[in-house]
Structure formats: structure tokens, C-alpha cells
Length: 303
Image (tube, rainbow, N blue to C red; front, side, top):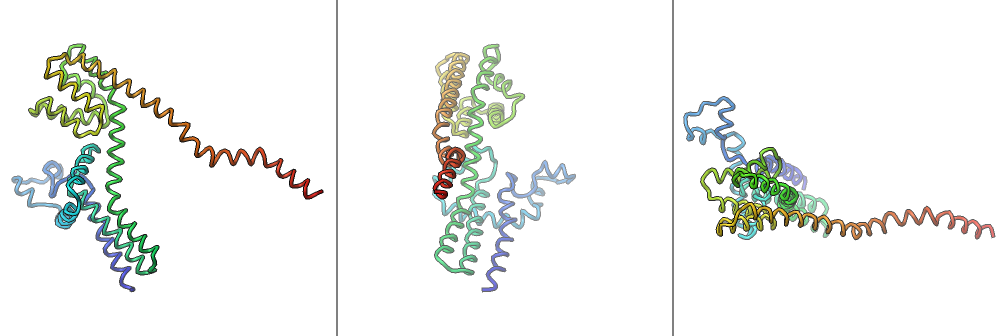
């Protein structure tokens, strides 16, 4: 019994650095060539770079690979596809293996913590707590990733109408579509600017414009963006002037943004009812009726 806390602490201490490396960033195993050159290294070729991994990579890479294999085997194919889509929507360049390794690692940490607590004080409540800890460790990365992807998509939705307006003005002024996109996001920051710049880079590398725009729509789970890309692709297919299409799409985007704002405004009274009933009205009743109740009680006691 006395060894359980020591074993649990050792497992947690081992899991923390592995989990940190698993989600620390998009770097692949080994030293990135640009990082190596900035450090002053003088590699002879790429083979030398691959044979010179960092110490942390040598230690954690096999563990992460094993955890990722087991975790992906336990996850259905639909879950893997959904994670890939959310990673793209969240703007994260993490390898999917690291994500699944982190899931399994957190599951193990939660299980160890729950089992140790159950061994110290066995009861049904502790058994349920152990199950909740394991489930929380498994689903926590999914929740974090979903929230980050949702927030990024919402940021893109808010910025899309103004950006399309700028693209429309630039196209009507005589610029080409790619030049208008570059002009619209040249001084901007945020997820939409990053995604548009990535699309422009794909076009510069030889990807057809329709395919590059389609990849942009696939990365972002945004219906407005899907409709915009479909309209642009159809205009290219049927020879419709793209300026007219952009003008119509910009007007529709502005209308949808106004409708969403009105919808959120209509929801505010409903959301205010609960705090009003639970917090404001009781305090108001105490302030208004409290003195009268106290006088009635005093008069009753005096009589």
C-alpha cells in the first residue's frame, strides 16, 4: 500500500515531459535545418541532420510513436478524420500522432490518479471518480481542440465580409483576383489573413486556383466560405465576370452578419431571465419588503 503513491508519482513525473513534448509544437523529430543553421551548426548534408536528433527527441519519440499507434487503433476512422479537420480549422500544424499520444497519455495519468485514490479510500464514489478522471483525460484534448477551432472559425466569419468588400473594390479597380486577395490581406493579421496567404502560396506553387480555393474551404468548416468558393468556381467555369460575383457575395455576407447580430440580440432577454430571477429579484425583494416585514414582526411581538 505504501508503494502506490511512489509508483503513481513516478508515472506522473514521467508522463508530464512526454506530454509536453507531444503537444509542444509542430516540429518533426530531429533538428530542423533552419534551426540548426541558426545555432551555428555546420551539417554536411540532410543525412547528418537526421542522425543528429536532440536528446529529448531520442527519449520521447519511441514513446510517443507507441502511444499514438495504440490510441489511433482504439479510435474509429471517423474520429481520426474529424481530428485532422479540426487541426486544420484550428490552424495547428501538429502531427496527428502527437495529438493521439497526448490523449492516451492523459488517459493513463487520469487512470493512475484515480486508482491511487481508490486504493487509499475504496468506495463507490472513488470508483466513479476514477472513471471520470480517465474519461476526462481522454476527452480533454478533443474539447480543447474543438474550442480552439470554433473560436478561430468564428473569427474568420466576422472578418470575411469586410475582406470580400476589399477584394471586390480591388477587382473593380482593375486588379486580378489573386492580386486583389494579396492586397486585401497584405496589412492584416488573424486567421483569415493566414488562410488566404496559404492559399496564395499554393497558387504560386502551381496548384490550380479552383483547387486552392477548394482546399481553403475544406480547412475551414464555414458555410459562408463554402458558398463563396463555390460561386467563384462556377464563375470561372461559366465565364461570369468575377467582379459581379464578388459584389453579390459581399452583399450576402453583410446581410448574414446583420441577421446573426439580430439573432444574438433577440437571445439576450431569454438569457437574462435566469440571473434576473435567481440573483436580482431576491435582492430587490429583500430591499423593498424587508423593512415592512420587520415592522410587522415588531408590531406582532409588541402586541
